[in-house]
Image (tube, rainbow over all chains, first blue to last red; front, side, top):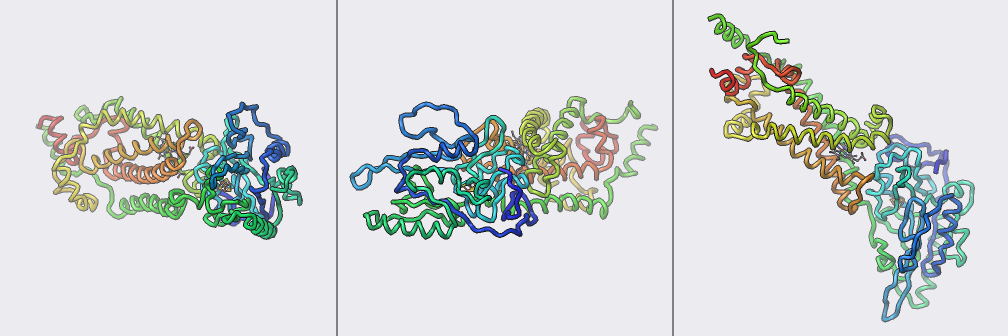
Length: 295
Length: 206
Ligand code: HEM
Ligand code: SF4
């Protein structure tokens, strides 16, 4: 989503500061997994607000539908059946972009301005500048971005940056019938989540907690989990996500260093030529051969 | 146009065409690849019609380069086998670089440095093709950790390759009378006798 803005905190492949005079409050979406009923109203609201439509799928035998995120489905409900203390638990997690404080997608993106992070924390793809290389997929620790088969651009949840910019809550929040989805300032959401965790602990979920992983600097989409000690139970939510060391190596300090090395080889060659002079064929040899020819 | 019938043929037209195809591919690959490498090089995408075109074209040019080098590799592989003389040449490369090549051991068609270059390019290109395919999201999907590893290998080999080729091109500029071997295929006898004496004897029978 394009959003002409003065509150850009970070811009992909950009080495000078982006326009950032406007100060805005950090926002967050809170997903309270313990009160989600898996109705998928948020999936429908997302498609409706963003004017995207998933192809009609088929039942895969479980409730997941569609079964994965796609360029048209920026959020999906993931259903997991796990056995806890001899009892079946149906864990339902709304999956989608986490809007990381330290976004791997943005770090990996080679196209200037194709991924922005606003001061409010939203990470937003600017599809008109996207070149379709898929580096964001490589950089993301949560496997979120999807490249469209139709136009070769990367898509994902925008946290309804267009709505938030004018003081509205994201579309999914509006549609949630149980209040499992909440939206507000990050601070408010953490407070609210803490109060939910207390409640869950009282009800016997001793390991209830907030999922706001510090490995990516915290996220602007947080979960309340009944089993915060084992986030993997919720369809493989990573326990300790972070930008992969390989991505750090690939996109970190090695690149400017390599650039300097290439420049050094070019300049070194020039220096060699200027100081040592060309390696000419020796006059002696030429004369010698000329003499031979004359015989 | 033959100016001197006594000049020695170093490369056939097929070999030269093969070499230039590789050279052109390399330049296009380096320019389009560097554009993704660091924001400082991003303006290079303009040479290809923008970022999307650079992204689309780069891997296809890569495939052409791989095939073209494969053909070059098969032609010159045997001539680039390392020998003890090459090792000696390499151990005394300093003298050569200093412009003091009088006492360097006599060389066949290629010297130790050229052979090292040949093998370095072969290894880099193999790794570039394999890692490049891992990165080719338009047509392939591999496990993400593998793609991440591919990205590191591709970027690393690309830098090594670019540095190696710069040295390769510079060597051809530095040693006068060399460029024409790749332009029109011949070198003077004096050039051959000075830089590749064993080869000179082989082709002239002297
Ligand atoms: C001389 C050979 C080559 C050079 C110098 C080269 C150079 C580069 C460079 C510098 C990058 C950017 C890496 C980064 O962002 O860190 C890149 C990306 C890439 N290369 Fe290569 N490369 C070569 C051959 C190939 C080959 C043979 C293939 C595939 C068959 C390939 C496919 C790719 C792909 C898919 C990307 C990702 C960007 C994109 O989607 O275009 N490259 N290359
Ligand atoms: S979850 Fe993935 S796509 Fe979303 S901000 Fe984090 S790295 Fe980017």
